[in-house]
Image 1: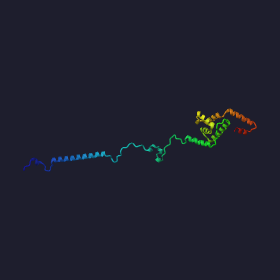
Image 2: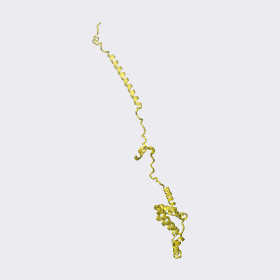
Image 3: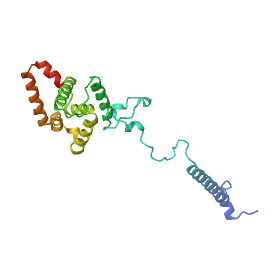
Length: 214
């Protein structure tokens, strides 16, 4: 048998070219499939939430401690007491007046009913001034306490004074002026002074004359 030239020159161990190409195509197809599989896995991982990832939240409200002054931050929450308003008064005016009235009442203050006798008015004014001096009151407190002792006609007179005067800011001297203008009738006072002088010049002693006018 005679071999052809081509067959004589071919290496019997050389692989067939068609088989090589087929193998390469098979490997390329497998790699492409593997690549597609990896891409699908990566896409699934992106769609799944991460275990350690914290979901986004709205801005939380500031902690209560941040709204408390620094001087109070060391105090436990259950011991914190709301701050009192700046304008809150420790003792309201009504309470202060009640306490002042109780002090004044315990002094056994004589009442004044508005008699027309200027001697009686003068005696009451002197008595109450002694008490007010002893209590050590302010000008306005003296006026307030004196008004507590005014009764009947004198109370009505004081109401009329309140209608045209700011008695809350009235000084004690201003009260005395108003009081004397109302109850110190000069004509009656002069007549009683003349009567008192005549009694002293007579058989009565000074003490007897004073008792007559009491």
